[in-house]
Image (cartoon, rainbow, N blue to C red):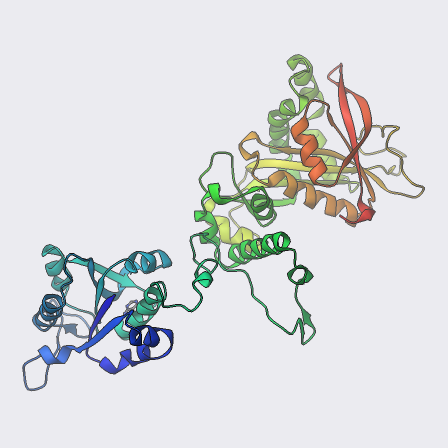
Length: 473
Ligand code: ADE
């Protein structure tokens, strides 16, 4: 690749003689030429700038001087049939990204026109564009430098390291931040394994490459969620597997069915203000859990009598019930969701897309168990003194199937139950609902028997599953 840089400070570009880029030039992979713009200024002071027409602060670089310089460079160095791009670094340009670097690395020749002061007369890019030259006005970020030279050095380094034969180990291009994966790179470590009391995740020393890859991917996701939620919002849903989705959902992002990108969600304890929305959500999701074998009338009856706002209000007020909800947030709350800060934008009617509840088997002062708790089936055997909880519900709106929200809700509600002393969890789920059973198995539950469950007057058959939470999650 041939690179020409036109500047009034040729010495600025000397840094390119150092390091990998300098070596690439030495080895002929890069043909770098730096030109002094003042060679094209013909007055006694070699003037390159003038005051802005129409008034205003600062100075503007003269089109006639730039025109002569660029005519020279573009004429002399025209590659035969190759792609040549005239790049004008400017804070008012499009943002230069890794995608831009990848695109420009495919060109045969790049010409950088480095402006100073208030910039180059705007007719210069227009003129060359109208002559068929590919012109790109590019900014390296939302801040203002004193001139385009440092920006040109940044772009040249980012582009040149993508050229074949420039990097010693081309594999390092595959996993780095801003690669096509759309995630920041995971944190990296080297020996010693323990440094100033800081240890690394033992998985990295396990030699188990599948687990290492998973750990690193989760770390990359966590880092990107925390630092660059804008990148998460742009991720291609097709690139996210089930484990990615589960990890994202615990970090405030879920992928709705058929959606192109993750959307911000928040998993939080329910409040009394959620009661109506919870009843709506329950009415939407309960029929799906009944396996299409229960008469719709009985289902409707069950919803109308049991899954009512009053039930959810009772649960919120009962400290033997852990009730958590997943709320879909407006897109602008994405960074707030990931930083966990409370937001003033909480909608009046929360957009609830999932909930989960654990009911602890403990009598209250009047000797009553929590409202809505089911009798513990005989196949659920508790040890003496063990606190038993019923995982009563994990329901996710059909738009959020496969989004990772169900395992995330399950893990949050389970953790809260464990924090409240529960060491044996049980649940019943309809015998035909294989999808739910699989999800519960993934979350550490195993089947111990069956039960008969009354839905609106009709008997339904459930499998009963348990998880001993003391056994390591
Ligand atoms: N010139 C001055 N500031 C710049 C920026 N942020 N990017 C590119 N060129 C510049």
